[in-house]
Length: 276
Image (cartoon, rainbow, N blue to C red):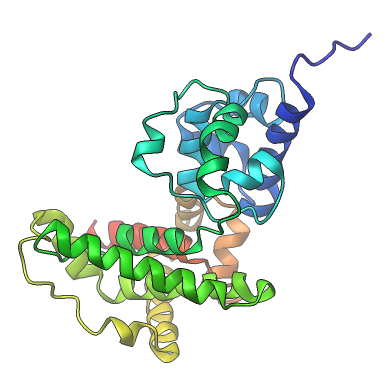
């Protein structure tokens, strides 16, 4: 006689959505995801198959790393991305060992409600990808506020069926900007003087130009093809990104176009190879 699962139907459903997200959205192997999370694949399998309930701390780390939307995970409603940025004051109130479902009901659902949080997600990508260039906290706060308002306004006016395309354009534009300015960005991050120096990253609007995006992507692919000429390097790159080898071949051939976050990872890898 099969043993009855001690988890509630809701907890099992949440766990199964985590599995669905990995397989259908990320298309990544369980070992690759587990490695990024700092756990073994057997433990991750226990979560994905509903043997162990998901805790808030793990979900928050997973969601941040892989752009998982917490409302979709908790309720199965809306899109599987983007990740909701949780305000620090809310984050401090949630215990990492609390059940994710309970933390969501008590803290996240009341905070975000039906909000798309698109502006917050896009803004987080911009802030994380490009070093800040503000001389004081007041200027930075004003910039964040105005940028968030603008991004949310654009998203609200975009038809539901084309929002995914808009998000892809924004991510690819940011990625091409980072490729174009990789030297300056690396210098900023190494010196730690980004808030005290004059920002050398100019002409941001040029990155939004479609021809510029294509040119920078072509340049990155050329560097990647050169770096993967030696035997075994494509496999090494696939392992670094955490994707099947076939994905690497399709990207390098131009058959498929990598997403914004993946493009940044490809850039990081090729820069590491070029420094060797």
